[in-house]
Length: 337
Ligand code: DAH
Image (cartoon, rainbow, N blue to C red; front, side, top):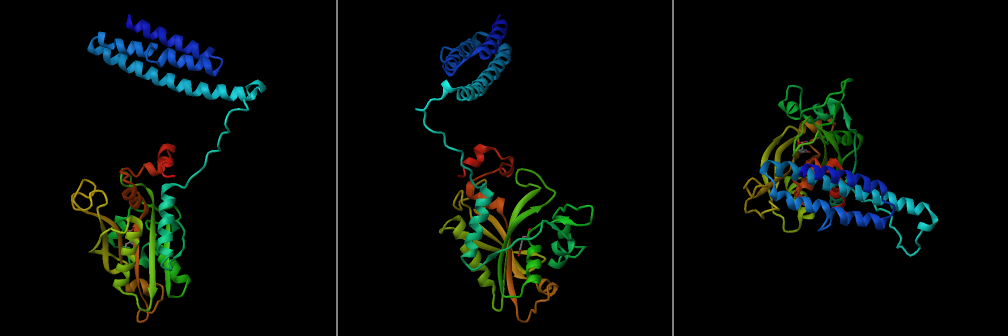
């Protein structure tokens, strides 16, 4: 019985949408099927008369039908407006103009711009480098010899010709130092690649690298610059802490955390109840790295840092799935305009 009625309704919907001629009729169809006293609504109300099993089956079926009618309404509306515009009599000069859609920057581009602006205010220059790299620039010159476990840790994509996709933006340090003479202050944003994918990892993501080389650059400068950066990006009240760490291309090495922006340091799921969020890696440029680019270590010192852009954006905007950045759903992207 119920089944027959659903089938009949489906047929009726199909025919009605084939016949509809103008927007007024379309509006009537909307009321007829989806309105408070509409036919789908009516059947949904009657579900309670059915057995559990039937309820499940027809409940689902009716909801699918409802979505379908909504879809049809939208599609038909577009079609009818289009048709009306085509015919002279459909031209209604009293209608307000339609604004052209305005584009916007991708949230990651916005964060990259914001980071670059913060660092350029301190005299850093923005540079870039190639995404297809050699193992030499990506690893060897950065004091990561072939046997080094760090090579495995950065699950590398190898190309057939022996090149690789850069696993981090650090090779830009090497390229810049070889091209220029110190002193220098650079930041280098860009895409990096690692064979890794889940809610927190994407095989392509973005990093920004920083490097400052001068005659008197100390660990205090590193702390000062990075503390400034954290406050610029996450707000003036942001707290930071530095923890000892290890990177082959810096000595000493640190990681910087900021007080959790979600719970204000009290401890929550996002910061794994530590009150802190890891933000970046940094350190004083390793003498081996300076040797690789022929900088005289008795004159020049420097610090470097590297951080993941997606991570910054996720923390800043409270996003918990990295894939949202790359799905390109308009709803998501429009919320950053
Ligand atoms: N390249 C490191 C990574 O991808 C990040 C990094 C750490 C860069 C310390 C640096 C640095 O320049 O000094 O994990």
